[in-house]
Amino acid sequence: MANITILTLVGSLREGSINRQLAEVAVLNAPEAVDVVTFDGLADVPFYNEDIDTDEHRPAAATALREVANQADAVLLVSPEYNGTMPAVLKNAIDWLSRPYGAGAISAKPAAVIGSAFGQYGGAWAHDDARRSLAVAGATVIDDTKLSIGSSITRFAEVHPKDDAEVAGQVIGVLSALAGAAAPARTAA
Image 1 (cartoon, rainbow, N blue to C red):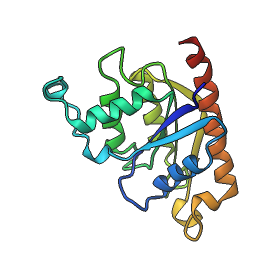
Image 2 (cartoon, rainbow, N blue to C red):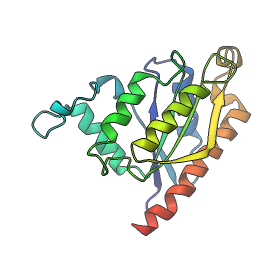
Image 3 (tube, helix red, strand yellow):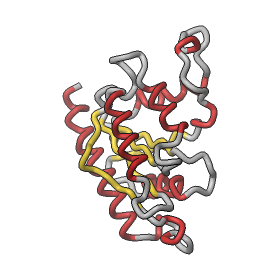
């Protein structure tokens, strides 16, 4: 049987962002029989508009996002907190992946949200909003699988998250929970 695939979407478009580095931690520490795939084209996906979500007009970037999500067994969002909520790029990705209604690319797929932010709560508000949006979009959110790392600028000032054993272990725990949730759904299909 093929490995379980976890699609990772990063809410920060900045190349050197700490949340992008957390996605790298996920890729580098994927448990055995798990592949972590990061979709790097979110900046190219236009804001969702039902008028362009047709076979004739759907943007290539949106099609690519849906295709990679359709092939994934689970979804991991890695999100900073912008003005108390998730970045627009993640909300937009969820909007595209929620369509067609009831049969979107993330429908019934296990999902979790992790991330880091400068504040002491590590982006918890953004993560709560992202989990809520994922659930409304049809994903099966694993509510007890959370990781919000606070004070990111100081914590990672001199160390990459991949070299922080505590963070790497917590990311592995999230990936294991997602893979565990995806496995039964996969065998039932």
